Amino acid sequence: MPDRDTAEFRPVADSASPGVWGVVAVLLVGVAAAAALWWFWLRTPQPPPAPPPVAANAPAEPAAQPAQPEASGPQHPVEALAPADAALPALADSDARVTALLAELVGRDKLAAFFVTDGFVRRVVATVDNLGRAQAPARMWPVQPTPQRFLVEVDGDAPTTIAAANTARYSAFIAFAEAVPLDAAVALYARLYPLFQQAYEELGYPQRYFNDRLVAVLDHLLLAPEPQLPLQVKRAPVNTELPDPRPWVRYEFVDPALQSLSSGQKVLVRMGLANEVRAKAVIRDLRKRVATSQLPPPQR
Image (tube, rainbow, N blue to C red):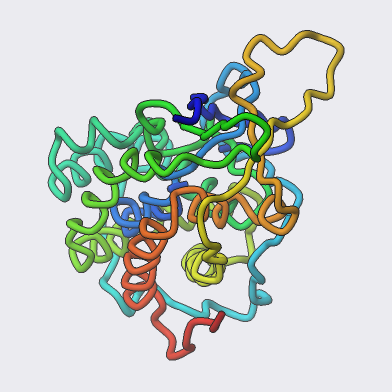
């Protein structure tokens, strides 16, 4: 029997920007459905700094970033989905209203189990924006950490690989994402859309439209590769003179092409091929609803 080493991926700290499985939460819309992406994020850890107040944060430098259209008007106007609520709270005071509406959508138990609701709108916007970049810092995630530990297979001198048993870690959330009523989730997203748009502008995109960014990120995630298993990983080096208190938790892909993927695409690849296919089905279904133009998704 091969020896099995276990490791738990923790959030990656990034001083340059704020916090998938996500993707897949993408907003309320994707909140529930796309939230899957953030949840499935297998983190390469560093001790995270104390979380700052949830506020507009400068976006990270782009890495494998989905293209954003020039500011020539919305490409996918949300008004085509449903009208916005007439009397929305201020963004800074929106947590209570958003939490209550999310609880109606997914149930209070699942809301508490899967989501972080303080600063939820800003968390969603920051994480969606970062899923197409090199890192999606954990302090801004709108979802709770993945339970249990990330497992690798270690067998003597053979390459270390991601253990097949990891797929079970994500089954509960995949089933949850698949069960979310997308029509209702998208309608709720549209009702609250001005809050998401304001948060996106405060993030540093005053001339951009958040729903366009969401569609671009969903398209980017659908282009994630689907490599055959098992996937080889290695412990990442620590570029510091200080001793690493938890060297067993630092893994990265051996294949440079996989390691260079965006944070969102890594989410999908690391969860295993069967889970990736199921997650993409949710993403594809969500994209059909939030992409209000007639533009088809890109092909792999």
